[in-house]
Length: 195
Ligand SMILES: CC(C)(COP(=O)(O)OP(=O)(O)OC[C@H]1O[C@@H](n2cnc3c(N)ncnc32)[C@H](O)[C@@H]1OP(=O)(O)O)[C@@H](O)C(=O)NCCC(=O)NCCS
Image (cartoon, rainbow, N blue to C red; front, side, top):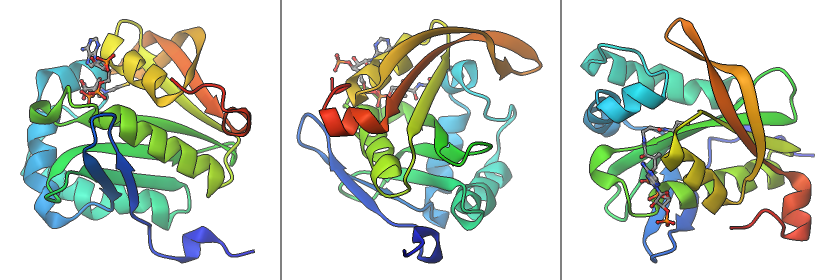
């Protein structure tokens, strides 16, 4: 059987519920300004673990090291979400660590691009690809309790809500309760879990 990781990280294509085409592709140098703008946004800082005091150097580190690293280590993939003009509109990571059949996801949409249905489409595409092509049994979403936007994205992408995991997430030196949802292999077979 061919090991997908022997090939370059693929580009995934999807379409939002409003008909906009998106490409999920490896990060490029030209994405750095978009990554920087997204990672200094107050909502991003509130709901994710992106480093504080994000700067151009950290954005370059994301593009050159962090993002390609997941594929190179054969531990999933980090994608930039690009619009029809190939402009950065967000990012999404599918991360395998520990159990090789389980991945978790992390994502953010650029502030200027929110509310267009981009992340729902991107999350569904990444999760289905992970199950179909990487052979994952479970793709897990976790968010700090109260992140209603992220929860809605997960629901729209076809993830089934599972409950609250107490102290389930780390956040800047503290523990936070987490909402947990997942898409599992059987959801694709049966069609369940589709929003
Ligand atoms: C949460 C986030 C990723 C949503 O991205 P997005 O591309 O705007 O999401 P979509 O446009 O696909 O929205 C999907 C649904 O969520 C809803 N939604 C989005 N943000 C919302 C919010 N803050 N509160 C409630 N609902 C929200 C949308 O209305 C839409 O639902 P609808 O189609 O029923 O109207 C984005 O706001 C973001 O990057 N936030 C900061 C980082 C973050 O929270 N990352 C996730 C960490 S777990």
